[in-house]
Amino acid sequence: MSQTSIPISEAALRKLQELAEWSGVSVAGALEQAIKEQHDRQFWQAVNAGYAALRADPQAWAEEQAERQAWEATLMDGLDPTERWTEDGQPAPTTDQEETP
Image 1 (tube, rainbow, N blue to C red):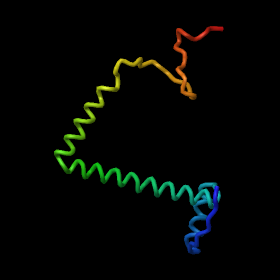
Image 2: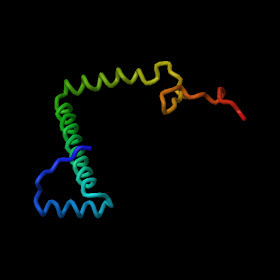
Image 3: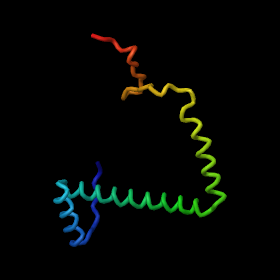
Image 4: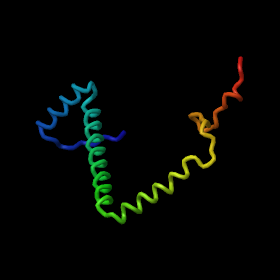
């Protein structure tokens, strides 16, 4: 991991140290967590604003709903609903294929 130095105020550093202590992580870990949480918060605010704008346009919202409805037809398009896959992307054996000891 690369390291970069950035100047921050003493007050911000104290708050960051307090966050680290509360969380039981390093100061760097607390900073990364705070950045991730702020990024996620702003991302979802933007998503919600986008959907609000879409809903405000009746024609665009109707088109979006129609597209969702079209995709609903693909959920059970003849695939076996009991099919399972392993972590490495291989089909898992079904219960009738499994060997019994």
